[in-house]
Each structure stands twice: as structure tokens, then as C-alpha cells.
Image 1 (tube, rainbow, N blue to C red):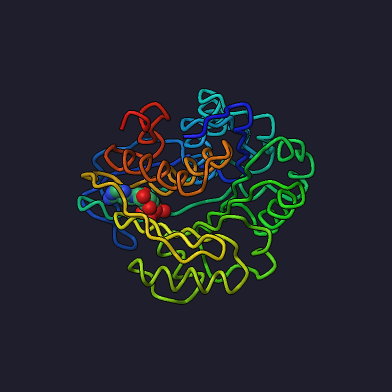
Image 2: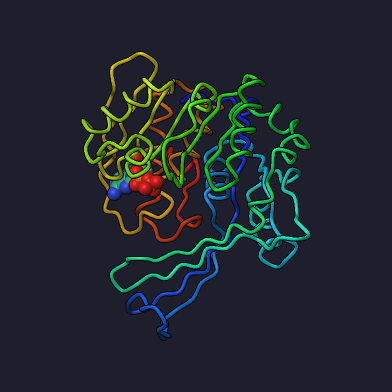
Length: 309
Ligand code: ADP
């Protein structure tokens, strides 16, 4: 494994949410009030999760985002700082409350989720202009789709202009990506549902993923890595033939944040100039460990744990 921590800098431009998780015997019907069994308040948001993953997995991480001037915001900031994540570019909105995800989980582990973006909607192109030095100091810049589209576009464009390795996790995906985004992205990393949404093609197997990756490359994406849960990863890198990377076999108990762990681990490795195949295998080992543990951020392993796995 390549290790050059002095260069391993990752900037994450993205969302931070407080996840409010209630467990109930079943999901409520419209109009129904249901007694739940437990409640937990857990730091989340794809941006926050990926920042934590990249930090635990070996990178120096800076977070570009926005929380509200409230208790949830203070707790999210403190959580990132406890991971040694640089929060100088994490702003505090005076008008919007911190993003929240209201999550109900039933006895069969099905869930229903309402996300209120709140302060994540205040991450604007102007935010990026104020903190361009953070992007300039990074080796790898990671974005998702939980901040406004104009912001994502501006982040991709700035990172590309600055010569950074640009990673987009197109989550949540609602349709094809704008065509002008694709040349700005070095690594486009959807899961199978997102790849299907981006392309309109079925993506259930590595072969179907290869077809979807080919469609995304034809549309202008340089490198496409589709995560397929326990089926591993389909990577279409440059002009090379698509390659399937099988996932390590583990007994999964909770796949929450598997994708975020994969993205953070991959970004940390790319920042250390690891060859992309090695970076994928490392990220898969990290994600495999995460699915053997409960929860989102608590399940994300450290680099030492991955090295020992
Ligand atoms: P998401 O969490 O976005 O839905 P995936 O479910 O595709 O993402 O998981 C991301 C990566 O995590 C996979 O490519 C794989 O490497 C790893 N992973 C997920 N589920 C498992 C599993 N059951 N066993 C081993 N690895 C897994």
C-alpha cells in the first residue's frame, strides 16, 4: 500500500445531517400514531459520513459545508473535530436549521426516511468561493448530491480547474447528470440504484453494470466505479475493459454507510497516490468491515483495522 500522509489531503463538499432514528414494530399508516421502541440521535449525511470515513482511513480531511446555529449543528461540528477533520470551511447559518433525517425502522429493518436539507441548502457557489483555498490544498475533492446542484457543479468545476482528482458520488440520484458535469469528474461512483437512475438501464449484475458503465463513459465520464453491494464493484477505468472486483465475503449485519465507507476509503487511497486497483481493493475491505457492524458512522473502520483485516 502506498503511504504518503503528507500528500493525503481530501476535501469533502457535502451534507451534514442529524439522523433521528426511531424503531417501531412497523411503519405507521397515514394519520396513524404508533408507539416506538427506541430512539437514537446519530450524526449522518453522506458528506459527513464520507469525511469521517476518509479521516479514519488515513487522509487529512477538510469539510466544506454548513450547519445551523443550533444544538444539532454544534454536535455535528464537534463530531467532525473529534475525528481531526478541519472544520474551518464548515459555516454556520443564522437562518436555516441543521439538516435532519427522520428515520423510522421497522422490525424487518425496512425504513422510511424524510430528509429536511435545512442548512445544507445554504452551501452555495459563494461558500465555495470563500473557501477555495481548502479545495486548492486538497489532492482529492469529493462531492455528493445532497447540496444544491449549482453548488455541486461549482465544486466540480473549481476542483477540476485546480487540477484535483474529482470524485462524485451521485447520491441521491434523481435522473441523468447534466452533460457538462461529466468532463469535470475523474471518478463517478454510483451504487446500483443510482447507476440505473443515471442511465435508465437495469443494473442488477456485474454484466448489467458493465453496460451502464459503458453508457456513462460514452456520455463523457472518464472512470466509472459502480458498487454492487455484496456483489462487489464493477470498474470501467479509462479505455480499459470493465473489471469486476468481487467483495470480500463477510456476514453482513447492517449495510448502512457501506457506500460512504467505500467512497471515503477510495478517496483516502487516491490522495496517497495509490494505483486505482489497489485503492478499490482497500475501499472494499473497509466497506466489508463496516457491514459487519451496526450503525452508520460508528461502523466505519480505521486504517489500522483494515490493514489488520
Ligand atoms: P450503498 O451503501 O451506497 O448502497 P453498496 O451497497 O453498493 O453501496 O456497498 C458499497 C460497497 O460496500 C460494495 O461495493 C462492497 O464493496 C461493500 N459491501 C456492501 N455490502 C456488502 C456485503 N454484504 N458484503 C461485503 N461487502 C459489502
